[in-house]
Every structure is written in structure tokens, then in C-alpha cells.
Length: 370
Image: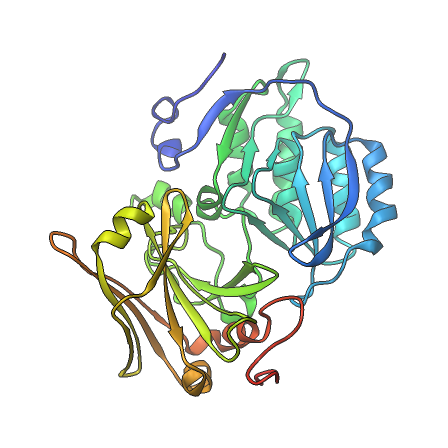
């Protein structure tokens, strides 16, 4: 098996924890089908990308549902395929508004990643999805003209030319560089709903770190992501691409009028539960204190701490609060964790999350919050 290590790639590639492995297995015929995902009708592309898939996408695109944030969703689970066929699908996508998503357990690689995924108006990777990049191939050798074509398409869709070209350059056709969700965020490959509404600017913290040696400060603007059958607003006070101390805000149809705040902490739930001694939310001088917060695993390596904003405080929180603090206390020798961020520029996204718990708009007392 051929492989590349981050150390071999030098400083440029050492900024990102990715794995590189030999491609294996035969490509299987591509399909596009309508499926139900998170309570909505979406399209799912699987298998090899070829000319037949272009025709299938054209036939199926009208069957996908427009989500409340204004986009249809295309799920991707493909090892790649023909570059020109992928670009033809992109031309069809550009006639509407699509969010490309690599769902949990899926792998989107080669032309799927470097062409289809990065061409979505919005593009996100679920926590256990994987995105893979490598060079185009011509006769088993890297094809620079093809790599330039992929990179120009990426640039036309708001991704830096180098974020595609560089990785194609460092991974030969028989190899693959795999990205996690945070990797994709860090190299500027993703774009979340709500970025325009909150003023969140294009973020490439790992590119900037590579060029300057310093990671940029996180932005205070909140973005939107899927949560169950609805949405959550989220902010990353530590870094734009780091999940540690990520704060989320969302509603729950089962608990009318309550807004739920969460903080993600790296570590197994057993360890975090055993050492947390309390938590509180601070909002413009007002505290919501919880001595025994709900603590559950977000996944095997990340734990999520929950706090609740009561109905009587919700409107003030959404419309008036400026600074937001999520504080978690721990037993010694662990130190407290405090995520501090701003709300003022993100009210549209916060209210959107409060109004969209699931497939139906919810709001407060059954009425949308304006």
C-alpha cells in the first residue's frame, strides 16, 4: 500500500490531521435517488459519476424539497468518476440553489469532493462523513490540466484555488488525502447556511496559519447547521474550525418555549460527567445556573453539556442580549471552561433556529418569533 504522512508533506500538510491511503475496490455504477433525510425529501448520489448520472440528476432535481433556508439538499457518497460529467452536474446545480452534504458514514472523494461538493451554494460535512482529494489521472499519472480545471471550478464557487490545487498536487492519483468535517472547515471547503445573514466572512484558518504561522481569531458570528429535523445556530469561540467549546442554540418541539444551549467538550462522557461540578449561562448580567446540567455523549470522543433558557427569558435573549457566556466548572485539577461570544449581529440566525425545531415552524407558544 502506498501512503503519505503529514511529516513528509512538510509544514503545509502538517497543519491538518488527515489520513492518506491507497484507493481500493472497483467503482460501482452511480445512482441518484430521492430519499427522506432529516424529515425532508432530498437527492442522494452514490457510486461512480458518469454521463448517465447527468441525465439522472436532470430528471430527479425537481423532486427534491426546498428547505426553509432556501436550498435543496444533495447527499454525496461517491468515490468520484468522470470530471466532465461532474462539471455537467455542477452546471445543472448552478441553475438553482443546492446544499451539498456528506452524511454520516459516507465518503465523497476525487471528482465528488473536488468538483461536486465544493460547488454547492452551501456545503457541509456531517460529523462522521469523510471528504477525499487527490490528483486527476491520465494514463495513471497526475494530469495538471485536469487539476487546473477542478481548481478553476472551485474558485468560481468561492473556494480558494489553492485549497483544491495544492492537495491534488500532493496526492498522486493512486492515493487519497482524507478530511474530517473540521479539516474541511479549516481549509475553507465548507459554507454553512446563515453566513451571509450574520456577516460571517470566508474562513480559511488553516490556510492562514500555514502562510503566517498564526491562526486567526475566531469570528463571533453565528452560523446555521442541521439539528435533528430542524436547525441549530452555532458559534465556535475557540477557532472557526475547532469543535472544542463549540456552542449551539436550538429549540425542541417536546419542550415548548424553551431554547436549549449546548457546549461541546472533547473527552469521553464518563470522564466529563465525573468532573463537572456545575454550569451557567450569562447574558448581559443575567445568569441561568444549573448545578447538575444534562451531560450526554455527542459522539465517542466529544461530550455535550446542556443548559436551558426558560420561556420567560427567550424573547429578551433573542432580541436584546449582546454578550453570551457559557461556563462549565470542574473539579480540581481541571480548570473551568468558558465560551464567550456575541449575539447582536446574528439575531436573524438565532430567531431562525428558534422558529425551526423540525419540519414545521415552531416559535414561542406556537407562533413564529418575528
